[in-house]
Each structure stands twice: as C-alpha cells, then as structure tokens.
Image 1 (spheres, rainbow, N blue to C red):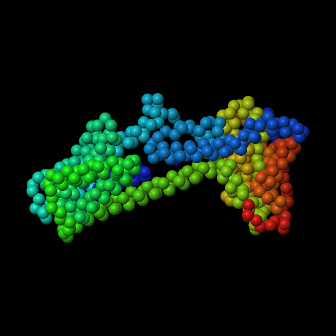
Image 2 (cartoon, rainbow, N blue to C red):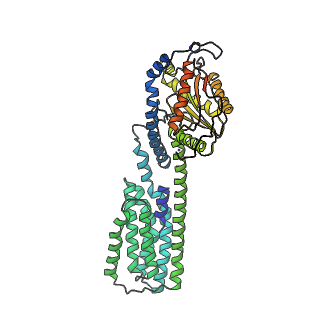
Image 3 (cartoon, rainbow, N blue to C red):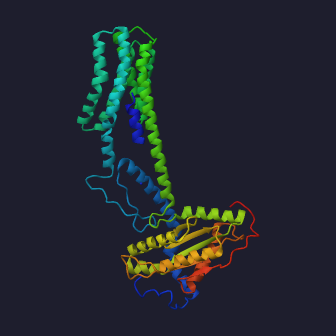
Length: 458
C-alpha cells in the first residue's frame, strides 16, 4: 500500500566630503612607519581577516544548511551577525508565541493529510486483491464485511481519528501500525494465498521504512504478526498457496501502483536533494555581502592559475585591493556604513573584471583578483579600471563619502613555489601603493619570464 512510501519521499523530498583627496590632488607620501602603524592599528581587520574568513565559511555552511531546512519545512532561519563578512539581511525573527520548532511541529501535525489519499488508493487496491481470493473461495458474508470495513471504511476513519486528535502526528503513527495489523489479518483470511499475502505484507512493511520514522517498521511487526496469529487461531484456515490467474490479475494493480508511486517519490527526492546541494555549493563559495568568491574558493582558483603558469607557462597576475582609510570610515560613520562600503566596492570589482577572472573577498576590507592567461598591460588596465570606478563611487546613504583604494599587482613567477609566495609579492606591492600616497596601482609593468618555469604539481 503505497501511501507511506510517497509520503516518505515527500518528507525527505535558499568618508565624508573633504576627508580624502581627489585623484588629481597632491598627496604627501606617508613614511613607511606611518603605514605600518596604521596596519597595526587595523590589526583587528588585517589579522582577523584569515580567522574571520574561516569562521565565516563555517557560519555560512551552517547558515546554508539552516536555509535548506527552512525551505523544506518553512522554518525561520537565524541571521548571520551584521558585522560578519558573510552577513545577509536578517529575516524577521519568529514571534515569541511561535518558536522556531513551531513550524516543524505544525508540518508533522499535517502528516495525516498527506497520507490520506494514498491510504485510500492503497487500501482499495489491496481490497481488490483480497476480494478476488474471497470470491474464489466462496467466503462467508462475514469475510466480505471485514473486507469492506478494513479496506474501504478504515482509510476514512483513520483520517477522522487523526484530524480530531490533539496529537495528530502520534495518532497517524498509530494508524500506520493499524495498517500493518490489517495486512497481517488478511493473510490467514485469504488462506495464506501466496501472491497476495506476500505482496500485502511486503508493501505494508516497505511503507513503514519509507516514512523515515525511526524504527516504525520494527514496531509494526508485532501488530502484523499478532493479528495474523490471532486470526489463524480463530479461523483455522486451510492453506491454499496457489494463486489463480484471477488473483494474479487483481494483485498486479497494487504491485504496479506501489512501484510507480515509490519511483516517482524517489525521483522527486533526488531532484530536491540535487537542487539543494547546488544551492549549498553556491552559498559555500560566494560571499553574500559582496557577491564575490569566499576566501577558500578564491584560493582554490588562484592555486589553479598558479599551477597552469608553472605547467604551461600561461601568464597570470594577482591583484590585492585594499580600501583606503577604511578604519576611519568605521570609526566615524559606524559599522553599518562600513558594511555598505564593502558591499559597494565588491560589486564594483565584480563589474570591472572579465568573465574568466576570479575575484574574492580576502577578509575585512581586502579583496583579491586573479587574472589568468593575462598579459601585463591587460592586468594593469583592469587594476586601473577598478581604482577609477571606486574613486567615482557614490553611495546613496552617504552622498558625501569619497572612496579610494590601493592596489598591489604581482605577476606569477617561477620562484613562486606556492600561493603564499605569490600573495606576498602582491602584498608588498600593495604596501608600496599605500606608502606612495594611496589611490594608485603598484606592481610589475612587464610580463614575467616563464622560461625558467618548471612543470610541477602544487
């Protein structure tokens, strides 16, 4: 009887004006110790960038799993903290009178509604199979009354019992156990006719497994065996194992319908799980605040670009981007304005790069871009485009805010044994851009020599 099989699949089965100079204004270069002092003062942003990104990825994964669960069960999702790198707009918190578990409980309480139509169909087809056996055996009228009561009246009675119960989920579990007892009852009443008896017992037990309710199938066995044993003691039937053509024909619809219902349910469940896995992967690799790659996924793409350079000599460039005086923005305008700046700069970077470039949020107010298979002129043009667009950026909530960024540019070299060595060169170029007055691009202007690159696996 396919009602529980389908239900199981469905249950199993998203800076103020004047505080920063314009690009044309002369800016006195800061001494190296001043820049280093600023970097130390921003230790929370710089040093925490790695740990924040790692924590952010873990929190994002938890948030993604919660979002998947919420879409399946319509549960509210807990918001990521506002100052978190992966912060998204927080949903409205649930009402105190309805805690997060309320939606899950409400969904479970509607179990009987999902099972009801399939119980009617499954019990009805089971009744056809049992009726064919009674017809051949010329069973007494009492057997026919039992058939009508168990196969055609019981599904509606089970619905009413669950609907009127204060604990509908528990009542429906009890109904599922009674279903198994009914199947066991009919085994001796059909004189152990082999085909319908095996089909009824197998389908009923499979339904309990398909619900996903822990050990329900095991709890149903005593009722099934007990009902079969009691009916055997009371009726003492003579075994008639052979199934006629009529019995086979009347049993086939139950087999076919149950198989189709289980297959459709499994197909829907697989499609749902596949879609949710894709959504989880997208959440894992995308920083929701900026739309760029997360640190971990960006490092994977940067490692791949470095491997291609060392294996085939394909030139690649790394851009390290830092928002100038970001700590001043946070301290003066607040963290909400800082979040807005990070989000806007992230979108600018995404719009300025090419389709095959990889941009990610490295942590805090730092971003990184890998330009694979790119010549020096192209890489510098991309960096200058990003710098110019950030300088021209205006925020609706902060119209007087003037933003600039500094960019360090480094080409992949044969001496770069790993990504950290490459990033150190880009970070050193970023330091030079900061020390030379900010709001500029610093780094190699000529393409790297790849003649000494030795193919290797990193």
